[in-house]
Image 1 (cartoon, one colour):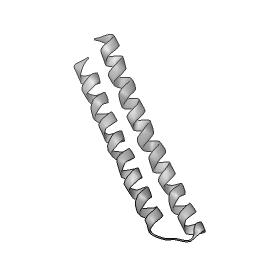
Image 2: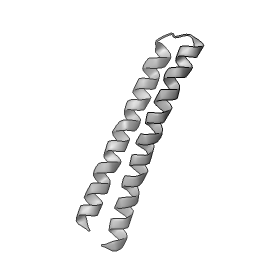
Image 3: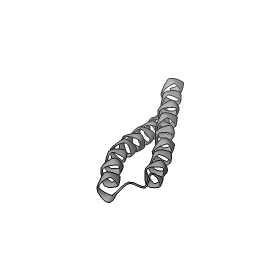
Image 4: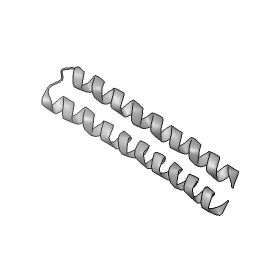
Length: 71
């Protein structure tokens, strides 16, 4: 079960890195001084990446918990 725990931890770490990247990218977009329509379009794309990163992080944490329960 160690492989499940470590792969889940790695997946969760990748998701966490993605979430941090989304925060940094969001701050950069806000500071860019774009008009409302362009700002909204860029943030909508960023929301999709944010949700994917959150999904990876949650999936990784579920694998860690599953590995602990089974091990």
